[in-house]
Picture 1: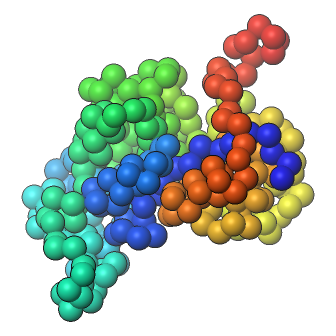
Picture 2 (picture 1 turned 180 degrees about the horizontal axis):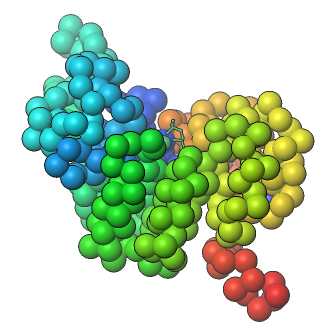
Picture 3 (picture 1 turned 45 degrees about the horizontal axis):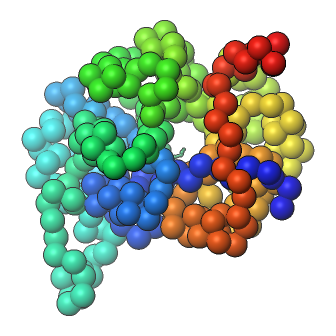
Length: 284
Ligand code: G3P
Ligand code: CA
């Protein structure tokens, strides 16, 4: 193992390997499992609420037609976002009873309240999904809500991620001290983005990209930028991340990854550094 530091373990859509993604139940399970941060995707409803949903439409996770952005929160609240994950639960005596509070649509506000009330610091990696008909309104509403929690400034337990450079620019204008993660869909996008993104932006490639393009992965690691990688669900993937000195691994299986990091390959926790390179006089 080449890495000297232990990456932060981020629960992707909650403990989404076991529980239906983006439900309160999935996030509570991730917290129980010891996740150090929670990842979520956000979309705006027709009446202006930020909800934690990945797909543009509701077919996969709520088994119904409809598009999140054209529905009001009250309508989304009638839907079951958990049954798709365990369609045979009604026939399984050992399956937990349905709980509309844990299984329904999750608002970002509820997720923030859950994290704010949690017994110790847990971070949030919030991804704004684009394209969407609401364009920049998503980032405006997001920063407004973060400000309500006092989480729009430096040292907030929040970072904002997007595959959209323009979306991250908006967040930077609205909340200049929030950490930003430029997600990368493909390695070939990096030469275009590299001259644009600030030095202190985190880069977020997928694990498949890193494994398919090892030279790109090594160059990115050697660039000195912080790297957060999704979606790291296998032991080999975690090894790849450790070898590259990745700072955060985003996983559907937080318990599995924590067990590997804490019990199989114990590493010292990272030394917390100033986010802005050069902020420490020793770096200048
Ligand atoms: O954490 C980033 C990752 O979630 C991006 O992909 O499709 O799962 O939102 P996706
Ligand atoms: Ca995501």
